[in-house]
Amino acid sequence: MAAFQFKTYYNPYISPLTNSVWGVISVTANEIIEQAQDTIISLICDVSGSMQGGKFNSMISTTEDLIRNIPDGILFNIVVFDSAVNEILPVTQLQPGMDRERLVDTFRHKMRMLKIFGGTSMSLGILKAIEAQSSLQGNYSRYGIFLTDGQNTEPESALVAAVKQASDLHMHLCAYGYGQDWTPDALVKMAQITQGWMPKAVPNPEDLRDEFNSLVTRMAKTVATDVALKLWTPTGANIRSLSQAYPDWVKGEAAPQGDGHTWVVPVPPMSAKDHRDFVVHIELASVGARVVACKPSLVYVSGGQSIEEKGDQSNWMILEQTHDAAQFQQVNPVVAGYLGQGELARATQAMTEALNAGDKTGAERHRTEALNIAQAAGNRAMTEVLEAAGKGSELARKTAALGTSTVSLTDDN
Image 1 (cartoon, helix red, strand yellow):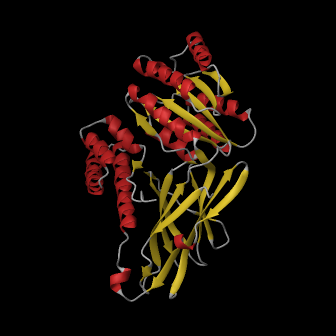
Image 2 (image 1 turned 120 degrees about the vertical axis):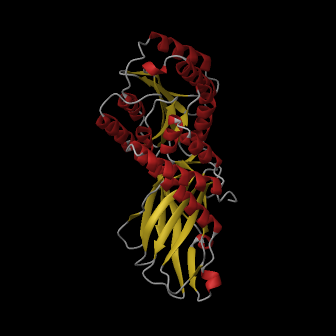
Image 3 (image 1 turned 90 degrees about the horizontal axis):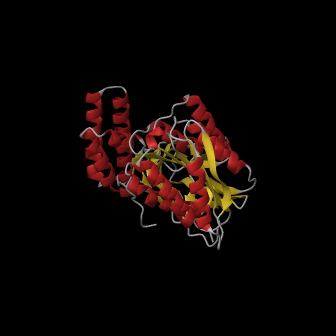
């Protein structure tokens, strides 16, 4: 059984006077019959001074709940950091029949013995998790769940170096801004450098347990890591842009492989039933009466093996020239919808940049533009965030800066 399904959306008719086309490539991960490789999850938690109180208590209860309920077979590790770092639970495989309450008691005892609530040295937590995971060689799906409620108090270069080491180990960092006093840039960089899932905000401590349980369940169903979307194009074709459109808008570029045909863009890990949509803009050197503009495939690692799965001919982008304006002027609704959501991402990013530059007038102009797009697209999540940002909510501004969540337009997969 193939691990992935493909579907493409585009207008197959093209004017003889046009040499470019927009399309959407949708990739869906199938349900896995059995886990292809083991999964290691490091929980990396901030215990700096600002964590005291309800946030700390919720983090503790959430961690205990994870120890009790993480699916069997997962290798789990717990690290806490402030201006120092401590490994609370070494990498432990959770197995059927294991006395998990004993692990909970050990966790509680070790936490009580620590001197915590100091500064915030994020790199220390990441490096300790890398050290723990590096002790296990072989083919694993490697994740780090990074939770912080504050701003890094060490040089930025230290954090960047640690995140790059995580990337070298193929550890995917999934970062969470907890409470309100966190910095979006640091969390976004973790996701971008390590190909982790885009960061999220958890402003309310009572929401942490459900959020982390859902995340770990998803990680346990990983179909593939080290994933890359590969596109074949005809000689002379050029991919002008390739952006992830769902579940978050992430602007990116496809890298040419030097053979004149192949373009590749990395994709974050995919779990069972995950789907991702990509908007591609292809410029063709010439268009004959009929041309294959693009053939998608997915390259990934599973069980230590590199595998390539290709979409069949029904999922290629095949263009046909026509002089019939009624045909070549048709707009595919999925393509049009995602291009609109790309404009939402652009306007939201412009709002964030203007606020960071102190340009409140420009920020409000871009916020209004983004809000209008979000409302027209039916994107309730972004509508609420942008409305709150307009009322002066700093948390909403930071949430918007994490990236633009989008509405799926291909749920018929």
